[in-house]
Structure formats: C-alpha cells, structure tokens
Length: 128
Image 1 (tube, rainbow, N blue to C red):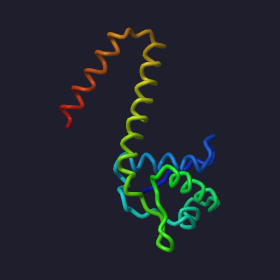
Image 2 (cartoon, rainbow, N blue to C red; image 1 turned 135 degrees about the horizontal axis):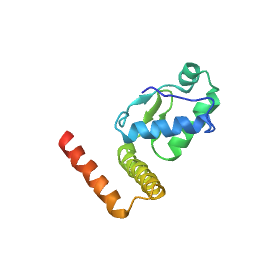
Image 3 (cartoon, rainbow, N blue to C red; image 1 turned 60 degrees about the horizontal axis):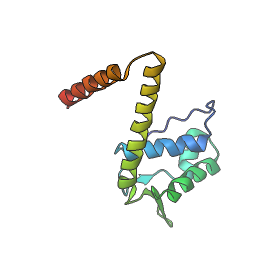
C-alpha cells in the first residue's frame, strides 16, 4: 500500500492517512490480518511527525478497522472487511450525489440522468 500525502492540502495529514487506509480496505487492497508499516516507518517515509501517524492509526482502531498487537505491530482487523463494505457504499453514494447535483446544475432532466446511468451500467456489465 502506497500512501499519497499532500502536505499543501487543507485536509489534515492524519485525515489523509485515515481516508487512504479506509479506501484501501474497502477496495480490498488491504485485507484482514495484513500488517501496516510501523508508526515510525510510515512517518519517516513521508517525513511527517510520528504523532500524526499514531493519531491516524488510533482513529482507525476506534473504528475497528485496525488492531494493535503488543510488540508485534498494527494489523487490519478481522472485522474490517465488513466495515469496508459500508465505506464502499458511502463513497459511491457520495459520488452519485455529486453527479446528480452537477447534472442539475447543467440543466439535465431526471430522465436524461437515468438514461446516462443506465448506459454506464450496461457498459460496466459488458466490461466485466
């Protein structure tokens, strides 16, 4: 898993880490029992404060996406797969909401939006 952190972003660094790990779990890149880099290793790799990484990991532990094993490291929790599914639904729902909002701003009708969505769904089925 490779994180892409943007120091100039208005989004705090720890939240960038949290979101990218959540996304990696939801996308199946990170699976239950996968080990994450240590706090120090991740901080050193990205030249950030270790407390930033620790805060992100703690946030993900509170969400039951990560678990720490004393002396052994930080791992994706066993229940992360189920929680990742909920995250996938939230992300796609937000993307659809943004698309519908944009369509309305461009003056598209509900029928036009439905037609576009149905076309994209058919195309996606063919590509699978």
